[in-house]
Image 1: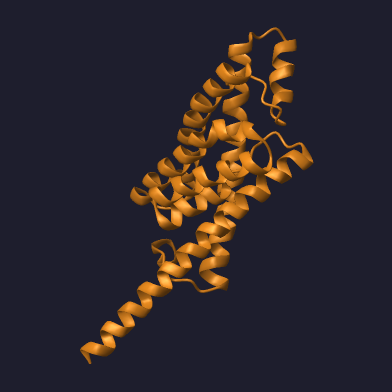
Image 2 (image 1 turned 90 degrees about the vertical axis):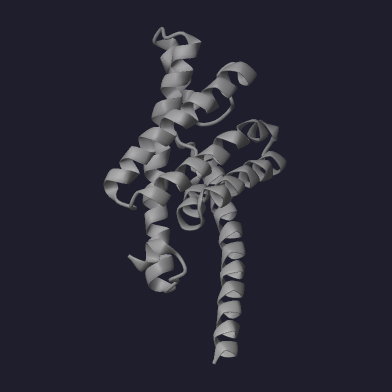
Length: 200
């Protein structure tokens, strides 16, 4: 009886490791597709952290951070070195998201609070990098808003930070909506019960 229980335990642990590997790859893939779509459709967002948020909620802050860093290193190789500079931002998104949803439930109130906190962090760190390294213009779709603000008389520093916060907030709201939909599919359609969020 004990041997059977041990075998089942080992089998379950092996399944969980394999599941985590596939979900990490899926999360990075979602981020890469999102980043490409933004450039293709010229959206005033980023969508390169949907997978990071998904990984952080399902597998915790460390894996979320790893997914975020891996995404931007991949984007740096595929789409251009500008993405290397912002790897730390995506890594921090994973870390903060993981810690927030480890302590609080996945509901509308927490999502809105997390969106504000993550947007503030992402805009502060990301815009500082953008301002210092690229003079506020990185070649992304959100630069259109920065240019409009400059034309309205805002100085570069203010324009970059206003753009950063609002584009980040919009981005995180869209990202969380997509993550919610993906989690529903994983929990209900594929009946994956390995994660706490799927047991609720």
